[in-house]
Amino acid sequence: MNDSPARHLALQGASNFRDLGGYPTIDGRTTRWRHIFRSNHLGQLTAADIEVVRALGVRSAFDFRGMEERAAGICVVDEITVHSLPIEPTVVAGLRAELAKGTLTAAVALELMRESYRNYVRHNTHSFRALFGHLLEDRAPLVIHCTAGKDRTGFASALILHALGVADEVIAEDYLLTNRHYKRDPSNVFDLPAEVLDAIGSVEASYLAAAFEAVGSEYGDLETYLRDGLKLGTAERDALKARYLQA
Image (cartoon, rainbow, N blue to C red; front, side):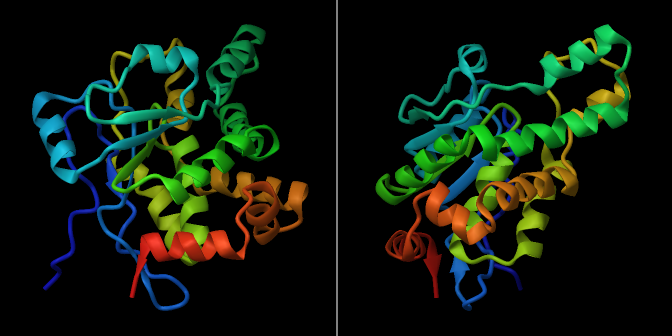
């Protein structure tokens, strides 16, 4: 009988709200339940959703959205302190530029998505570094999110799980759960072809792989990125594991 908490919390106003707990690590431990959540934005939670989030005890949110995105969906849970770690979105502007040139296809959209993930490493490592600083200082439970909770949040979640010692295949499974749980906001419809919207409204393994390819190109390997890019030395890794793992 499985008595673990629910991984996905079926909120009305946030379709991709998930727990990073319960994942086994290579050293035989498990990520703690109800400590780190990942989600799409918290600006459309219903009154019932707010009660669920309050019952979880969430007090901090780490928000990767850009300036306009944040203004369009302010967190509606008064008790949550929001820390902005902005990574401005680039994909839709790139898609519209391709559309204007008459060169937009699903394949182009997929490559723009992959390039955005590479740029998380090339240009936005400081935001992920700041996240880990908070993870070492702020008290859980906490939530990490962007607008859809799938790309910026997906890469951040993968980095957290890697730093805690979760195996690659488990990290990939968590990343792809977005395709089961995320529902696109119907009010956020772009003037783009359906197959292009499908490419940007879901995740695929090649997106996350592109980010880790950039890690290899820029830093040599993931361990060096964690140490030099994210400033997670042995002491910091041990402290993260003490906080977020259980035997």
